[in-house]
Image 1 (cartoon, rainbow, N blue to C red):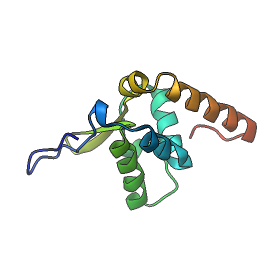
Image 2 (image 1 turned 90 degrees about the vertical axis):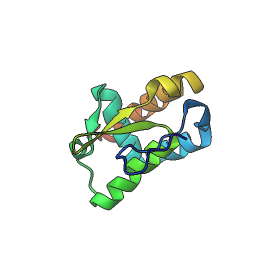
Image 3 (image 1 turned 135 degrees about the horizontal axis):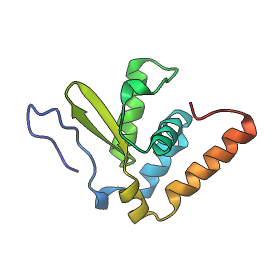
Image 4 (image 1 turned 180 degrees about the horizontal axis):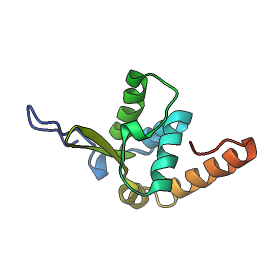
Length: 119
């Protein structure tokens, strides 16, 4: 895991080789975290945490983003005071080919079936 220097605002992330399938599946199993991942995949760019209209407290939101980061699903970086989130699609596709696309496709089908939009 890459660890930031003391006093740095960089956040620790697992290296590609450290990402584990069970951690990724755990992160994606939560509906709110899956919603975040679906939004990142749909927008195809880094998004600020505040761009996600989540129906939870800020501390709960922070927890969900931390689980996604520590599992290797997203990369979080500070740009000024903003914490940006980006999907680690290249890493996930290299380690688990097709997994992310299958999960996103299944989530989209379920959303259509249940009538729930991405947001």
